[in-house]
Length: 107
Image 1 (tube, rainbow, N blue to C red):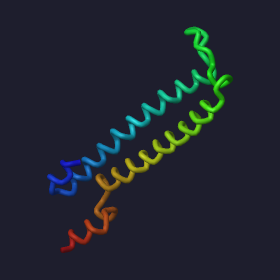
Image 2 (spheres, rainbow, N blue to C red; image 1 turned 45 degrees about the horizontal axis):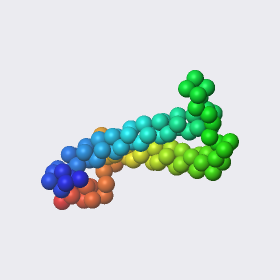
Image 3 (cartoon, one colour; image 1 turned 30 degrees about the vertical axis):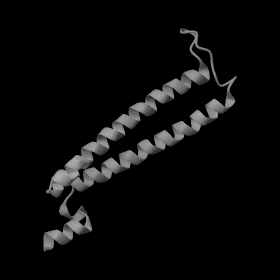
């Protein structure tokens, strides 16, 4: 974040925000995938490793994990939308630029 204040050019700031959005989206997607796999093992069990299912004994655990997975994948969708908006701002034409950018271009 301090790099944003040091950089004066708007294009560099937009590029930095785009790459940070992408990095966070992929990190969150990886966390969502691994938590989905762990919850699947908790619900079904794994006979090869002799892990038994957990949901039959602890019902509240599986309900909370389900809500957590829903919220995690919702956050992934939000970060995908942020990435699309950042990409449009970075690679789009000046017509898709923010109003403050258009005002400074005319001044």
